[in-house]
Length: 348
Image (cartoon, rainbow, N blue to C red; front, side, top):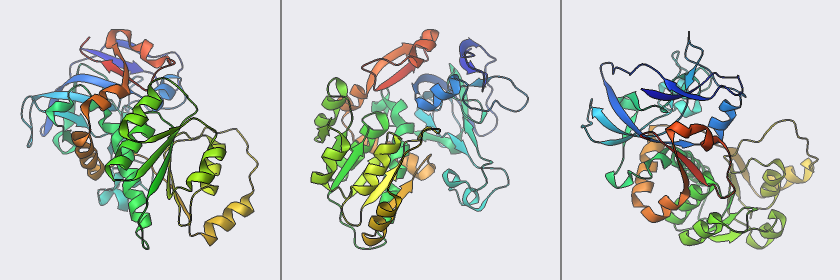
């Protein structure tokens, strides 16, 4: 079968090649791959920045934003079910968090991840997955179900925001989402589903991003963040860019009892000068909180499946701005001006 593979930490090694067909072990599903979302993590691995091949191997099958259809069932699944595979697996020790099913909060870093760290991903025509790490999707999501994994990221972020807020009386009204990529827009979707006044900020002033935000009923802003924050004073900021200066502006710009949830990973090597004293003063005197959130566990996958099942299919389809055949996979790793989410068609 064909698969998208890479030699981790070797730039220019991305290729579509032939690998042996998988054979499901007891308790595993055999799945026909339908589509694969491409995200920043995949691009970083393809650039040789990190990644880990399975033990004893040079190449890693890439891809963690999965969508497939069951061929050989196991557990409670049936042939024909639409499924996505969970990305992370708990460490083998395990740490206390992994032992409690919270492997997204692994303490010792010995977890593994499909398509990223020591386990082949979902970027192949066929793949297997343990029944306990597969999530059934509404059949209506066949064209957009690869959005499942990024939706889990924001499902977890919103869960964490809620938990932090409920340490005291919590009745948020307004959220600012910074960044109108897939994570930001899906985060805005979940904010709208929660009944909040949602604002989305991105530097892009035209193209699909403003239209997608406005179609949700959110307010879109293309102005600099320092011009937007004073008038909004959001109760929540969901930060999805990883831009260092914007992160600190967001921390200083919330209303009292504000919560900033960071989901974007900032690059290293750039130094910023910040007024740490003022930031500390505001955090303390206004009972503000800044949290980071990454990855997802079973609970977040179930929440994401529910959110996608309730979303407008046309809106979800609008997030997918380019579909690239597996045979031309390299094209999906080149940024396009109008890209929001680029998807690989594993059947072509």
